[in-house]
Image (cartoon, rainbow, N blue to C red; front, top):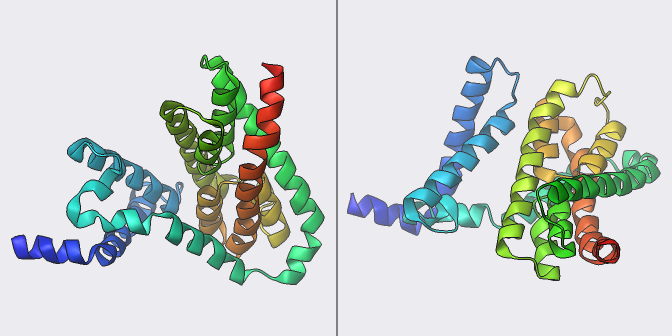
Length: 252
């Protein structure tokens, strides 16, 4: 057993890929056999991942979830910024430049609408929860954009770790809801073509939720939704700690 554990610790990244693969396989079975595909596999896998992270944190008392378990330390690298950015950028290679040009203006407008609406919805919820200072309101509002924009904004304007954690939680909830709701509502909202996928990605913004939801709806739409969702994250990181923060600070 000691030899096995040492072997797993030395090959952490390979073990992480194996664990994620098994997790997705189990999620696929649960989605199809128990939930009758009403909740897509990616959404079920996200929920399993969150539970696994929680269990890892409780068992080890650490701050990195399941990655604090020695032989699963590779999960931290697999879920780190390098692989995240690689996955986001790689999705753009499947998009058609001609179709992207046709949706350029609409995609840009959807980005602005998506960021503004998400930010102020998150800000309103934060106000109701009792956060009335500009730093906390801005950070939680940014978290409603995505769970990446939240901590980036919080770190930039000096938010507390508690508020930053809350902003991340807000973004994770949004991503999970988008992933689950997208395939259920796709037909009703006309989400069946690249143009609509780009607008959808621009309005929703959360990469994880958009890509998981589109993958469950039609895998061919993923690159288009991911493209505008990626710009959404970048634009949110630019606007939230600067323009939005200054506006909120002036108001409150």
